[in-house]
Image (cartoon, rainbow, N blue to C red):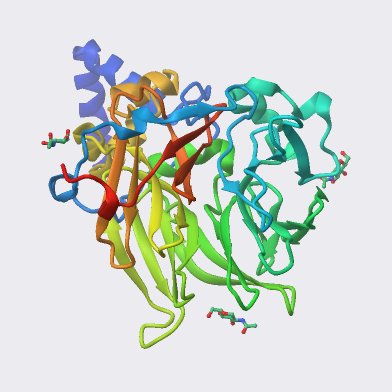
Length: 415
Ligand SMILES: *[C@@H]1O[C@H](CO)[C@@H](O)[C@H](O)[C@H]1NC(C)=O
Ligand SMILES: *[C@@H]1O[C@H](CO)[C@@H](O)[C@H](O)[C@H]1NC(C)=O
Ligand SMILES: *[C@@H]1O[C@H](CO)[C@@H](O)[C@H](O)[C@H]1NC(C)=O
């Protein structure tokens, strides 16, 4: 039986050479023997992820088309490289920022400028790691795991210690005067923490942090999105016992973490699923997880403001073309194995990014939305900090910090 089918198939293929060519090309793409495709050498196996339907999210989102982010100032241009997370100390100094070259730096005012505050590895060297404006380009990638990539920063306001989530070195801490940071958590249950991304500190000292994937590190983060894989975790480090615990697992690109002002819950973003989730720490739902809001794009960090509201940075937006890929893992399997550079594949698949930031309350009501639709000023934002009537906006991929004067919605003029 088997043999007969083979014979028939061979016959058809030989009579129709174009089918033979097609089959050969297709199998070449799927097998990718020479690892020419963007996913060459990776165990790339797309799956369906738990993302809300495109149409319903886009239709219900309160769009703001005033491009108010376009009014922002780009500061420290080409002086600071990929400042994903921004922080201020209890004396009001800052911003502090984690850079693409592996350093944590701080702004010491016009006269002194930027100074190196902390390093995540003793092996950091200026020669190997400090690539200036190239720290946010591909040139840095092969050095990243050695030099470090501090992604999340938080001060413990009581001790003045700075906690760092480094994509390669895990959860770390450095004292108020800086220096080389000390690792606190590099493993959990015997497995390495492959991609620490962000953290927040509970008032009892526990540190909640995200480990984005068990399979891909930061340099390969794009494949987490393409694959839809969900091996990320929310972890908790307990300083009194120096132990690390898995709080939640099976998350799709867990990224930013933020405790609520009253510490009764925390929010975390799931970038692949384009949503913000809530994890309850107290009350009847303690230990449970709930959807807060579905977003029109891919969220990064979340930060609370003085009023207890949350800012989220979003790389925008989902597109109709992407939706086809999202719903058809097999299509991603074939398409991203084409031996064509990723930037062309991504562009053709409708992945042109612009930027949006949103302010929400604990129920997921959207209080304000600011965008920069043409990407004139801001692209790939990663974090928004509201400090004294001003937004400080970080970016993981560009060499500046954006600032923008900001009044809360109630004080804004009606439009
Ligand atoms: C804003 O932009 C969205 C998406 O492009 C569009 O659907 C919506 O109609 C616009 N809203 C206004 C008020 O122009
Ligand atoms: C520093 O480099 C040495 C030698 O290459 C290596 O053995 C060590 O593990 C590195 N340390 C860190 C913290 O990466
Ligand atoms: C601190 O609070 C967190 C969140 O409620 C909890 O998981 C943890 O056990 C607490 N740690 C201590 C030492 O009480």
